[in-house]
Image 1 (cartoon, rainbow, N blue to C red):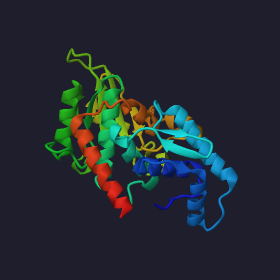
Image 2 (cartoon, rainbow, N blue to C red; image 1 turned 90 degrees about the vertical axis):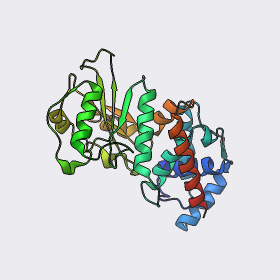
Image 3 (cartoon, rainbow, N blue to C red; image 1 turned 60 degrees about the vertical axis):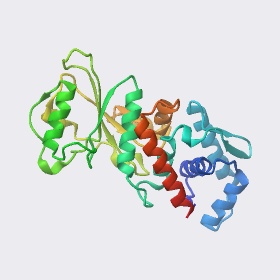
Image 4 (tube, rainbow, N blue to C red; image 1 turned 30 degrees about the vertical axis):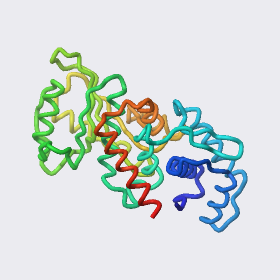
Amino acid sequence: MDIPTPNKADVVADWVELKIACSRTSFSKAQLAKDLEANTSEEADEGFLNSVWDELRRRQDEYKPPPFEVLSRSIRPTRSWKRLPSYLPCLFFSVFGGSEGLSLSAKIFERITAESLRNYGGLEVRVFGWPVEEGDPKDIKTRAKNLAGMMNETFVQPPDEDKKDDTLDVAAWKPFNDSRSSQIVVLMQCGIGKDPQDKANTLRLHAWQKYIHWGALPVPGLAVPSIIPPKRWSDLALNEELLLDRIRIYNLLSHGECEPSLALDLNRWCNAEILRLAS
């Protein structure tokens, strides 16, 4: 398994996470040096290796509980991905984006995002992104009207028919169980590209304010399978008020609270991708 970007410590750290998650075996700093040299035809710099290890230690502190343990010269997995099946797809997307033949990738991540929001304070969730969920109407007018009805919000006008999902991938809300509006509503854009900036600021919130008269202004959000670096967090949060990255997704789902059919689909998807990667 080649390292896509062998000169960036955070990307190499993603690759190490994916490698030990798939193999479920320890991995040494010496082996990483060999793999980097094989990718770049240059001897790995000790300072760069240390920066990768420092990044992995930082992640170890943020994952609750961590899926791996970082030692001085090696890293070992502490939990099987089968106990938290949402973790491995996020790693695949972080390393490869939506490329490398990953099947059903966008829809899989939308469902992971919805499940994460469901566990975040008991929100009601709806996957809205294109292609539609099985059994949902394909035309966006009907789906937008149905969404407003589920939320007890006022449907005003339909989106253009060619919009498909008009940038909305997942909707979530916290109802008061009194059939009235004015509630917490989150409208999420999901991106499986390697760079979180790819989908930043792409949610057409103003358009959705025209389609639905919200009792309270919705919160825009961005979900990505990568880990958003600390230096970019504040800038992204200026417009995307709710951020979900791999750390938050992992922590929200780390105790196994996953809808059974999604857990089954994720296990099948992960097993297929591991076999594909090994072939």
